[in-house]
Image (cartoon, rainbow, N blue to C red; front, top):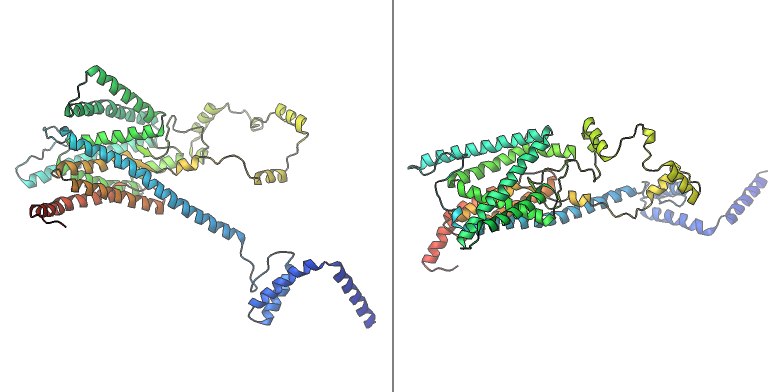
Length: 484
């Protein structure tokens, strides 16, 4: 009986060996030899080979008794590497995107200061925010007056910022738009008229008032359309740069010297607190705009990409999390504007009406939609080009106030440093270095950061060091004819 049973078992083993093809056995033996060569002992190798043969149907082998590495980990690593590459790419791109407009704004201001004497001449006029004069008998009285002037100016800035944040928080968009409209109107018409008038006087250009009025009218109307409605990107950016330069020239003209330097130092500290503090007004403004998925007003922000503001909530773009953040009343209003709301969920067919379905079935035959077919269709590669929203969202944004105070620092350095170009260039380089460091921190932390503190700090240090140390040293070298 034992021999017969053994014979039967041997015959069955031979039949199984004959029926199983040899190419299938070779891939199963190769992992066993590989595991044995890596194993530390024979027992471990045997266990590994047994596990592989028992659970393997063409799958990847186990190594050292451990399961193979999961494929999604590699996918995550590649995605992280791609994110780092994109961060470096867009970081360098954003540095160039901001260096060009900041440089242009400062060049316009410095060129005007060096050529037009109106903005450097002290004619006794002051702003209503700086009522205390600096033409005093003692230095202490001048310091006290400058501190009082800076305190009044910073208080006005803080109050106006709080008013803007409250209006935005309670959705008073019409009031904000009217406010910004009047400000842009004043800058583009009155200040530009004053600027052109002084430039024509300096270069002795004859022009009648009728022609000048036509030029100013065209300049102002096109600027209002580009800033507050739609226009080419480069034209919108050019108008924002010109507005910042005009405002900086007004500050340089009507702010006293010590008051201007003190305002620059205090405004950088205020910018740091307003953006980084949890209850800072600028941080509240940015977070509220992000929660509502709304762009901040383009009259306040310079953007490297297109910013159009026809309505606060643009219905042409896909809204991410906008329905969750918007109140029910606003949702009903938006739905009423976009399309008539369906009376019931069953009527919301998305455009696939019964007539459309019958025509498709007549052309293609009856179509059956199951979970498997929908899953296969979703997994198929799409031939549509990727959306451009990511590129627009990657665009870097800088407040116009930063342009104004950068240009104000360089313009004041050019106006008060005895006409020395070394001090002007030192302040210019310092501001660009600070802006580069700010963008580096922006790429690291990936949240809104103040752009004034680092650049203004470097600018003030470079100004006083160059004007009080480097310039006298260079004058002495030139006087004694020493060359380094």
